[in-house]
Structure formats: structure tokens, C-alpha cells
Amino acid sequence: MSIPPPPGPHQPQEPQGQYPQAPQYQQGPYYGMPYQPWGQGYSPFNRPAAVNGFAIASLVTGILCFVPAVGLVLGLIGLSQIRKRGERGKGMAIAGSVLSFVGLVLWAVLLSTGAASDFWEGFKEGARDDSSLSLKKGECFDSPDGLEGFTYDVESVPCAGRHDGEVFAAVEMPGGSYPGDDEVTEVADDKCYALQDSYAMDAWAVPDHIDVYYLTPTRESWRLGDREITCVFGHTDGTSSLTGSLRNDETTLDADQVVYLKAAHVLNAAMDSAPAAEYVEDDLPGHRAWAGRIADALTEQAGMLRDHRWPAGAEKPVGDLVEDLEAAQKEWALAAGAADADAFYEHYDTGWELIAPEQSVTAREALGLATTVPSYDYDDGDSGSGGGDAGIEV
Image (cartoon, rainbow, N blue to C red; front, top):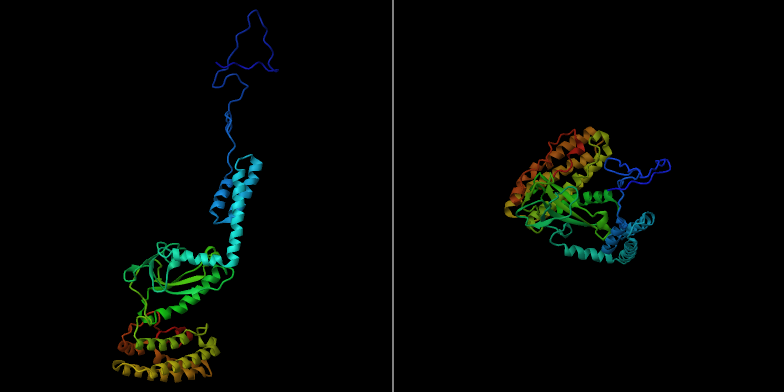
């Protein structure tokens, strides 16, 4: 039974007789109004104050000491909220802040003395089996995350079987502060594309579906001393597998093949230096300078091939190729001195025909090199394209 409250001042006393009138009870779930029922968010029991979440996070972060600055900030926020809300956890917030401050001091000492770099080297050695940081030139690997975007874990696998990528070079960036994502990507793009020929010297032996990728330092790994860019061959779609190694350099080729390919690279480098303007009419001086570089490269290439003693089966094919190169050199030299675009095209067309990729197939076959002209390098020598024909591989 619930006892009703006494009448308030606004409730007049009922007249009393010999026997007081029996009290009247209000029907419903709550008796004896105007007492209020328990409201939402209020408990009749005496509960202790909650522990502040920032204080807990600060303590955990301070103990782990991997992001000390974050732990210090969390601790200061926690102390502020504890004062305002009356929450518990002041000791944890203080302890987390102190540990985080000590962590900041230790990190500053590590970075100023170079100890962080030593730590990073040790970390890389410890991660040999399952980290992208452990990849070395010539190794093949699988990447669960593919070759595009972010990847944190790779597995080294034999190149003979199916794999996602093959490392062909590593580039060490200079020290200093982190240069930014764009600059790191630009350096990786320039260096990796320039270094692919030193690993896969015979570009004709690299399938059309192969492209260049790279693993680069992040802002976080840079703080620990990571400066290495890893250059990788992978499928053009970034996900399909490769089979077999793409390596063809001094470690896999014979001496005659190496001499031939080194001579070919001289011309290829000159061809790649074409001016930005596609048409000769748009930049005649630039195209004449380019033709001069090609003429010089042809002189050097022909000399390298002529001076080498070739096997009996390759002597004549290489000799015929040298004659074509020397004839082409004269045409490109004339193009370099052309008075106008028409004269340039006249010598350019003849010079191009003499160094077209098909001209080297016989010599390549005699030397045991790939003989299929890559589709992405082939061009029909259209005289209207000028520098657009750069990048052939001979």
C-alpha cells in the first residue's frame, strides 16, 4: 500500500468528524501524486562517477609509446573533462601524459642522434620474411593488396611460379624532411622507368602486358628512416599474375648479347629525347637538335658494333646492320642541318627506314635475342609525326 502525501497548501483540509474520513487513493500506476515517477536518466541508486575515456586512452597510448604526441593530447583533454564533469581517471590521465612526454623526449633524442635510422635498419632485417621492406633486386613476390594503392604485406615467392611482381631496382632517396607524396612519386616515376633497361636489357623480351610499379616510403615510415623506393615489374592491370623472371642482364646474357644491347641502348636513349612538339613545323630548332643527337648516337652505336669480334654466325648479320646504321647517320645529320620542315622530313624519312626495328631482326636472331618487334614500339615512319616516333627499341 502506498501512503498518499499530506494535502498541500492549495488543498483545504476536509472537515473532521468524530472519525476522520478515509483517504481516497488515485487510480493508475502511480499513487499519491504530486510525487513524480523516476524520470529517464535518473537512478534511485547511488552510482559511482564514470571513468573518463580520454584518460584511459592516454594511459594506453603512453604505455605503448608509439605515438607519444597523441597520448599527451589525450591526457590533457581527459584532465579538462574530468574537472568539468566530475569523472574519475585523473591518475590515469596524469600517468598517460607523463609517459607520453617522456616518449616525445626519447623520440627527439633518437632522431637527433641517428638512432632511429639504426632502428629502421634493424626493423627491416627483422621483417625479412613478410614485409615489403625486405624485397631485394631479382626477387618475386605476391601482394594480397595488389600493386596499386597501399600495401603493407608481401610474400617472397619463386620467380618460376606465378607471382604478382618482380623487383628490378631500388633507389635510395636523400635525407631531410619528408618531401611530400607528389615529389616521392615523381622521383619514383623518373628513376624506375630509367632503370628498367639495366635489368631487362632486351626490351623486346619483355611482354607487352608488363608495366612498371614502385613501392615508396610513406610519411610515417620516413620518420623511422625509410628512404628506399622499390621498382617493380607487374601486369598492366595491377592484379594479374606473371610467370617466370623478366631478368636479362649481365647475369643471364652472354658477352656478345650484352655488347649488342648496350650499343642499341645508345640509340634508344637518343630517340627518347625527342622534343615535346609532335610536329616539326611547331619546333624546327628542337627537332634539328634531336636529329643531331640521333646522328651522334648512330656514330657511337656503329663504332661499338664494328669494334667487337662477333661469333661466326653473327658476323655478317651484324656487319650488314652496321652498314645501315652508318647510312642512317648521314641522313640524320642532314636532317639536323635542314633549312626548313620539308627538307627535314626528306632526310628523316630515309633515315627512319634505315633504323626501323625490322632492320635488326636478322642480327638479333643470330645472337639468340628476341626477334618479335614489340607492338608498342613499332611505328610505320609516317613523316607527318616527326618526334612522335621516339622510343623505338633496336
